[in-house]
Image 1 (cartoon, rainbow, N blue to C red):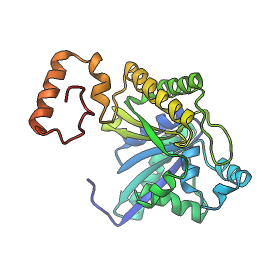
Image 2 (spheres, rainbow, N blue to C red; image 1 turned 90 degrees about the vertical axis):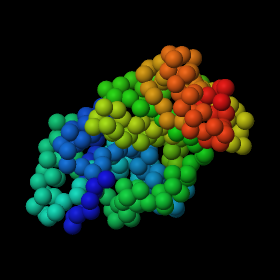
Image 3 (tube, rainbow, N blue to C red; image 1 turned 180 degrees about the horizontal axis):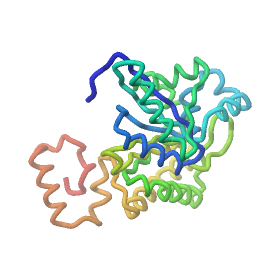
Image 4 (cartoon, helix red, strand yellow; image 1 turned 180 degrees about the vertical axis):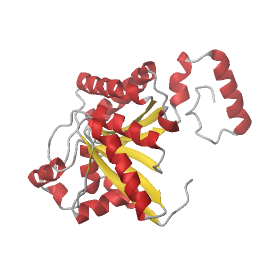
Length: 268
């Protein structure tokens, strides 16, 4: 929780690759001046910022998509006056420079759409769902381990023939993603958008296989996960005494089994 001050501003920083983006985000958090820091990759940013007409025009959409940096990060700043804001911006610029990060702005309509995203507006949910239905393949890991997880995801997709595309028709090497630092850089939330076509049985089957393999392999890699079924998936790898405590807490707090029934644990 942060108080609102006279100046509330969002600074956008572009990076050229995943590792540089993570390093920049780490430094922004370390500064201790940002209300929030989070980022997304080019396909995610472009899809959310595009207007409803351009997504129907593949060539025009490709040019629009290419106008975004590979990774776009926002730092939320809250300042008492312009002097404080100027100092904060200078600190962010200095932190980004070693990793090739640069301030970026966009034309008014695009910027307005991004502002809705940065502000957490419910309008963004509509644009999030422009592609086929999808579920998020989550992970919680130290930032140093995210590049390895990203490559693990790529390998699983290749093994399964799992293909994702943008509105330009270009096949994605990696899924659309969202990155959010937690716990003062101890762990990062890494969200990947896995799409499928509900009218195509093969697409649904590939999606199901991916999610099963992804969660099994990412858990072995060290990731905790955010889903009702996390403990059910992880139970065979957990210390039995710990799982006994979890069962006891679940039964104490939910004696009638109305919270995530049959989802958390196999026997509850």
